[in-house]
Length: 424
Image (cartoon, rainbow, N blue to C red; front, side):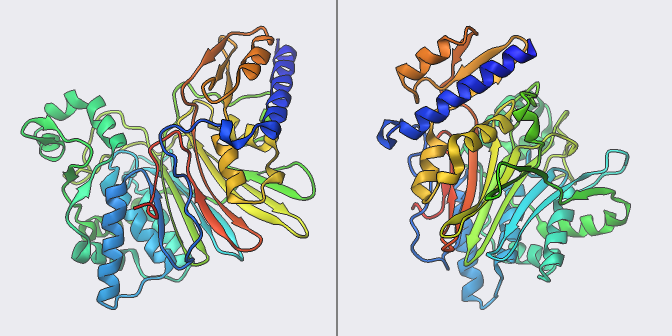
């Protein structure tokens, strides 16, 4: 059965590679988000990504206030400030107790960071704040406390929620309505707050001081490790999962969909991307605030770095894949489609928009985005003699690409509710 599965997997992938190389860009159907990257205008412009346009607008207003008051901040400090704001925007996925992974990148060096609570420790831990502090230390930046003070003093009071967080509190409505504390935070006139409405602003100075008071007791597991996977001498691939397993048709299928909170900031030659996630059993407040405590010992979104070195062209590409039971499978398929042929942001955008498929087991079946594909593709898939099911949308992939000529772009997935601050 395993050998048969291998044959199915590789024959279908070969077919999709051929179809991607021959498919015209105008055949790819646009869905939720037609604007997936920013035109390159001014590299000194601060570009933000997350799923909340109003929070982006508030943050850019905050940066303008700092500039008007002659308070200078480096690109890494802006990135950490942006990361801290995510706690107020997504107190479920990006709370202090969440697992935190990040990419920091300059034209000279890129780094991967991973922070989670040591599972052997019974004490509370704040991996997110610990990780932000370590990144600031590495880049010899302002302290976490001083950045928290800036938010308390100058950030606008309104902390607007997104459609995704609205869906989360809707899923926990019973717990919220039975708690006077959570009703205070998450309801208005006894109704759950909705997208565009705001949460109370967190007191970041108190939060960071509480973190520092508990820091000595915290046991945080840290890592910069990525698994090596290389196709040839020109393309180097590193991931936070072992991509070699996919080449052996060993799939990393999770019982449930993996969803993280993803965000990023780009300015000058610096790029930052962060992702947070945690498992929440019972709703528990952190210090009587809207922040929710959770378990950081979880499987995160799949992340890969693709480094192409050619004499006249090349790039460094980081991709993050979530909203899937096996997000790594989508990154493996992109690699098979021919990442080496990317020469522009338009090429990458076309690749991300291309129709996806995913194998699931127990029972063996194939999920396929038929509305993005063609009848010919579907006819070929039906010849595999396994059940084929349609999906309107499969997964979510966000990323950043830095070309050899130093042009640097974020790219989002048109399937999901991402937003780039360059689009007003």
